[in-house]
Image (cartoon, rainbow, N blue to C red; front, side):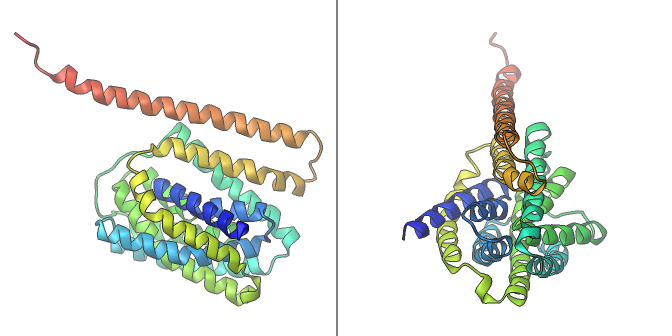
Length: 302
């Protein structure tokens, strides 16, 4: 029972992050399961089974709020499902020793991307409710996102959402809603690949149950939270956490040991805290500027 409660809390926290950023559930949950001792393939398989339920609930909510561009869902999700299926089959056939550093390296790459993106150059804001992007851009993006998502235990949001928001041509609510809805196709394909490669014996059902309960409970709160917390600050925090928690595995795989390991963790923590402070100051400055604009434009008393 204590383990189930801890897993539910982990799923709750991961869903809050994902709901606030449009990304982060897979990489956050997988990182926690790796720290709990699951093999990379079992961790990714468990997380993707959970994400079938959470992605379905999230997609339904976004559809109800008018945040879904169905053309974008299909053009991104169908190639994404192919990449996820191939990635799951590949990861299922790698040994634990070989796949652990590989997965940790992918997670660190995703974490660094999120960290730098939200600290240095937050995505621009657009207003278009339908995506102008064509298949020649969306198909390879979806395939790459699905492949990274399956092999890294997460990454559909960081790859797809971040790329579309960076382009600055579609309203953020449409990007996040459509990517979240298309994630259902990706998670179903990845789960099928893991079942074919591992069988049901490779899945930790306790982890699935705990993460699913926590994620479903957090879904409505995450929808409210996204309107209250600045995504730049959360993005930096998530990126720093992912890098911090996976650094040990990568260093061990590279044969690095001794005092270098704690020093590297301290350096990552310090840089993350510094960037969180920079992002928070940028948000406060933007809010002060927005609050001052009406006073500047207001007519002066006669």
